[in-house]
Structures are given as C-alpha cells and as structure tokens.
Length: 501
Ligand code: NDP
Image (cartoon, rainbow, N blue to C red):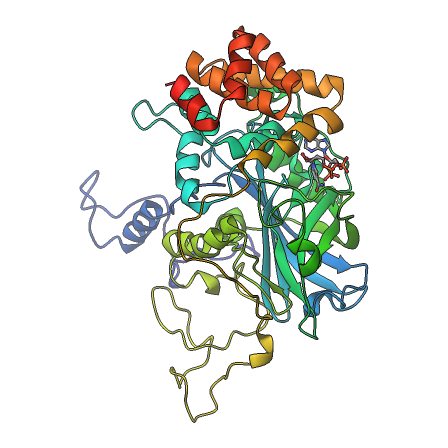
C-alpha cells in the first residue's frame, strides 16, 4: 500500500481487511452472515436513492456570493442588504421542471432558479424561475397542472392532449405559454438565462414601512437560447449539456454572474395599480415600475458532493429573514406550505440540519428529536417555552408590519378575467422580432399538432384572443379553419369549452 493511501474502513471507522472477496464457508461455498462488511455495503446501496422531487427533479448547483451594490435600507431592514459592498454566501440551484432526474437539460420547460442566502439572521431563499410569471395564479390548480406536464398515467408517455387540454381550459396560462414556446423556453445553458422571483414579496424597513417587491437576476453572460432544432439534437447527443456547462465553466474560473435588480411598489401604488400586483400571471411593465440595480451574484465554487449539496439542497419560499416577508399572492401562499412539506417527505423532519441547508447562525428553538437528529444543535434543556431557565425568547421586533385585509371568507373567482390575454399580446407584438414570432409559431405547432383537433382549435382561439395575428398564424400552421378559430375566440370561455367538447 502507498505511504499516503488511507485505510479503508466501514461506516463506523473500523478497518476493512478485504473488499474483493466475501467470506464463504469453503470454496466456492455459500456466503456467511458474519461478513458484516458485505452486509453493510449491500444494505447501504439498497438505500442510496431518496424520492426525487415531484417538480424540478433534474438540476445543477453551485456556491458563490451575493454583493450589495446600492443602498436599500429605506426599503428593507434585512441585515444582508444593509451596506454597499456587503457580501453573503449563496448556493444556487438551476433545474428543469417537468422532467425526471434523468431527463434532458435541453427540454422545453421553464427553468428553476433558486438561491439560498446564508445570512447572519438565518437563511433567506429566493425560489424563482427563469420566467417572470407563471401558468396559473391559484395553488389549487398546481397539482393538476403538473400532472398534465408529466406522463399519462396509463401509457407512461408525455401526452400533448393532457398538456394542451389543461392549458386551453386555463386561459390565464397564455402569457407563460407564450414565453415557454418562445426562444426562452430552451435556454442555451443555465448561465445564459435570467432568474425572476416571479412572485411579489414584501420588504419592510426599520421604521415598519412596507413595500412590494419583485426580483430580477439579469445574466451577465447575455441571454442565449437554443432553437427547437438545436435543442432536439442536444437532447439526444448531450442530455446533460447544461449541467456539464455550469460545472466546467466554474472549473475554468469562468463562474457565471447575475446583476440583481428589484422593482419596488408602495402600498398606495399597489392599491390603484392597473393590474392586480399580486397576480403571478402578470409582470409589472418596466415603464410602470422601473427596475433598480441593488447587487450582483457570482457563482464560483462547484459542489464536492452532488448528492449532499445539490440533491439534498432544500429551498423554500417560506425561508424569510427580518425585512422580507410574503405578499397576498395566492400561488406564493400555497408554496409557503408545500416546499417545507415536500422536503420533510423527501429528506426527513431534520433536513434543516444537513450542512447544505443549515443556517450559518446557530438556530435557537424548542424543536427536538425526530429521525436523524444530530444532537444538541438547539441546546439541551429546556425543551419547552415559556421557561424560567434562560431559554431563547421571541423578539417582537422581528414581526413584519401588519397588513389590512377585508372581505368575505369564501372561494373567490378571479375578478378580472378579461385581462388574461393583454400581456401575452404585448409580448407577441411589442417585444418579439419577426424571426422570434416565426419560431414561436413553429414551436407551438410542432407540439400542439400532437393534440386532438378540438383542443388545437380551443388553444388557437386563446392565442387569437392574445393577438389576432398570433392566433391566425398558429391556426394556419396547424391547418385549422381560421374562421372557426376566430368564432371561438369571440365566445366566452364557457361557450368555447362547450363548443369544443
Ligand atoms: P419592455 O419592453 O420594457 O420589456 C420587455 C422585456 O421582455 C425585456 O426587457 C426582456 O426582459 C423580455 N423579453 C425579451 N424577449 C423575450 C422573450 N422572447 N420572452 C420573454 N421575455 C422576453 O416591456 P414591458 O415591461 O412593458 O413588458 C412587455 C412584455 O415583456 C410583458 O408582457 C412580458 O411578456 C415581457 N417581459 C416583461 C418583463 C417585466 O418585468 N416587465 C420581464 C420579462 C418579460 P428582461 O429584461 O427581463 O430580459
């Protein structure tokens, strides 16, 4: 054995004498139960997999830092944002959404964009996507939506009928569907895309004044996308291309960076705003609320263990620090529950003790025990509150400011259904070039063409409602009767659904 070579041990540290030959009774002989090393090796192997994430299963991540570049203390008391030049360690994970852990990085899909800030006041997680909006605004629809993006429960195949049936029955999705089928639906790599909080969050300052805020992480590598044809080739030739790109760029010392901007709205502006400022299917147009640059994120260190650091990384939009809080955005409210819940299922009740998830400050609380507890992280006794043994006590000053709410407790349908098409129309007309519009229509036709004709008609009518030319071009690309699409577009959603049963 070489001088510097370490001795192989079992999980409990004792040396292993042989890692090639099981202990047998004679030669060849049956294997003996007393080969404890073999038993341990097989038993651990049998348990190597944990449940994959239901969404965002395939991902890549890296460590780095966030640096503050502007004074935002008038808006938030968050300590990690308190000084220009202040740096905070981060861990970011990028992912596709609808695929499985083995699916191709070049799939047409939104990309997850999650950042964990290890601040001195605890972890703050920004769990966004590479799109500023989402397909739906009520978490009650989320499980159904994801079912339609995954596999048909009978055939186990991706199913264009399921995919487009749901979207065409959910017209609020048309804005995000338009982004998904634009060039941005297939980013060239994780380094060449923006990240957005998508949700609106609350920021509040030391005086208790609050503001509504949206985050934009703008890639400093420049936006670059794949065409459908390029993505189709990559899916077969290099299904892990974005994972490889991120790792290799960081190894080369070309760690990617993002300029961090925020849009900020006062409660008074929000009250009178032309859109519901908490509707995640809408952006705040830049002219209404100009983004301001507040910092920069750099990723410069690769994980040493993919499993320990990327697979076990557990982000949650419910991880706030003082100065940042939730908004009434309904989808966000659902996510505040669901992320911690899924991690408890996937990683266990003590997943916050894993090094990648543990905050840098020492947590002080009264939760104890449970599977895989690693000891007196939160101290020994007492394990209850209130107590008279100097155990940790709440700090009332950490409370976010109160927000007034009013109305009836009831299931409330969205009150502005006609504005579902406006911003998709802007994107098509104002933002896209002719070439981008042509690729958009081609990308849609290539996918929607796999669905039943009645679903194609219903969806083409939804595109028509966003923009007449957009709907017409999709209908023509699919060989549909354009006059029929126009007729369907003039109907209410209920009539349209009845007419395309
Ligand atoms: P602006 O003209 O000020 O901004 C348009 C923005 O669209 C660009 O800044 C860019 O966002 C983004 N963009 C460019 N190409 C695409 C594409 N193919 N797919 C998706 N986004 C693209 O317009 P408004 O702010 O008035 O918004 C108009 C439309 O632009 C919106 O309806 C929305 O669809 C889209 N958009 C708006 C964003 C916003 O926060 N206001 C953000 C992203 C898209 P970026 O600078 O973030 O790269």
